[in-house]
Image (cartoon, rainbow, N blue to C red; front, top):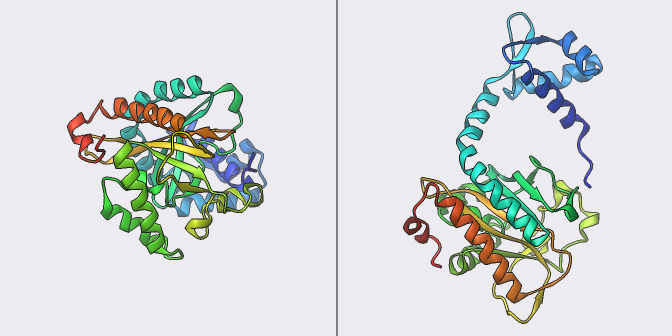
Length: 288
């Protein structure tokens, strides 16, 4: 399992402590005492959280939750209904196939796991809820199938990459997704060994050297090393709200099984989307 950042864990502890006492603010001394941090460590973290708006420093030099957290809470509240609908679908897929089923949300230049259901065999799976991983092709195809303009904004955040190569891989993924209703991502044999790559660097580098690649065509009788099978969920504005991802394959599987699993992930995404989006509007993007 990837090692968590000590600074991030301590910052989260500060936010959690203040959130557990709504309507109150705390001085630096009170935070140091409650969280058993050194004064220098606490001061450094609190100052950084104030700078980004996660904490607010009052005129009395005490600290309360900041305005940026309130904005994040509003976004979280708006997403909550579809996430609640998705939870039983995640559990059913994870339990039925003894895999891990996750909700991935796009947050700027990152893909973040916001909900997850794990079978008993996969408890302790490496990536954790809330961990941001750089969004790259081919997964990006699932987020941008309805919004090519947003794809260009995303590409602008990746000026260090070969943008033409990224566009090509994203378009290949969109074509497959429109044809089948799901996207099959395969383990890339040309990628460096995963155990030698830090988790936060897993999606850096040239697109043809990333840990996953798009399945452009699937032979039902051939076996494939599958990384994940994903499908988008749409909101009331016909935009991609989040992506369902089924992961945890330990052995190569037949192409015919990929189609079975893909259809199940796709069907789950349809059921979730149907709570706010009629089928005809969904079919505008996925011709299946």
